[in-house]
Length: 94
Image (cartoon, rainbow, N blue to C red; front, side, top):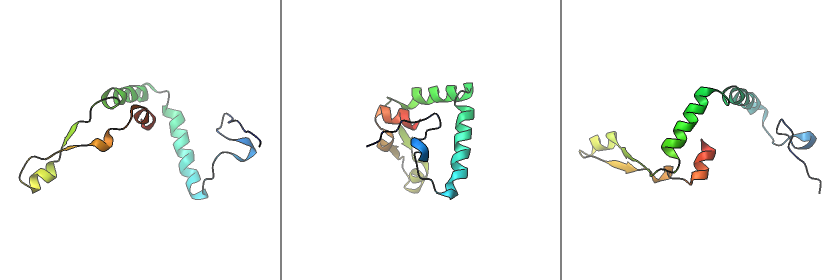
């Protein structure tokens, strides 16, 4: 079996690394261009560090459900356990 290594453009061998429908190519190119534009900016770095400090490795906060509270004439808080992922997963998502 032939092994391929990734080149600087993220391609494996002569055919690339992913099948992308033509309808998505423009969107993916725009995403790539914007990523390359912001990844080393100071504002991106600040926001990324803030998100790491506020979300990664923290307990899940309570969310005050204002609309539900109003509807049921009480105070309803939701503990968003769905936001409580493993730390490495949060780092990847951010």
